[in-house]
Amino acid sequence: MLILTRYVGEKIMIGDDLAIEVVDATPSRGSMLVKLGLSAPTCPLDIMSKITTPIYSGERLYFGKDIFVEVVDAYPYRNRIQIRLGIEAPRTVTVHRQEIWDKVKNGEANEATQPSSAK
Image 1 (cartoon, helix red, strand yellow):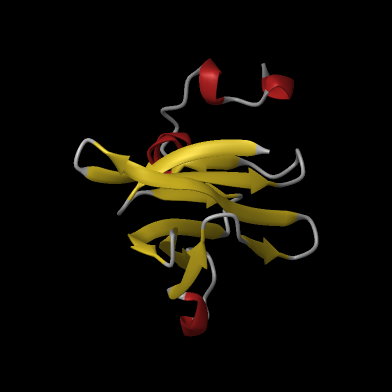
Image 2: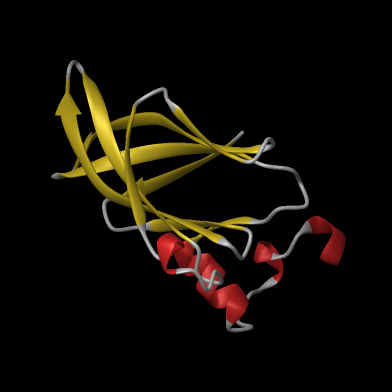
């Protein structure tokens, strides 16, 4: 499982088709309630333009049978809430932080962002 740390307003990209944004995080019932915004930038359907779903720490969202996102942990850090997301996906599916994905799409990626098979 890949663990990525995000703050409210930050995104991860799974493949080219799924963007997951941390919309909000608030304490609730002794746990942390995280709202994730799901969007598909390449999908022409308006229904996938942006969907927001609440998820508690330890819960998972499944996308198909082999991809899921789990809220591993969420806690205050320097006046912000830091959310650790666990992503499980096949090795053929790329997973990037939004800022890295933007560089890859703009052709600015260096060797550190390339898959090991591309080196």
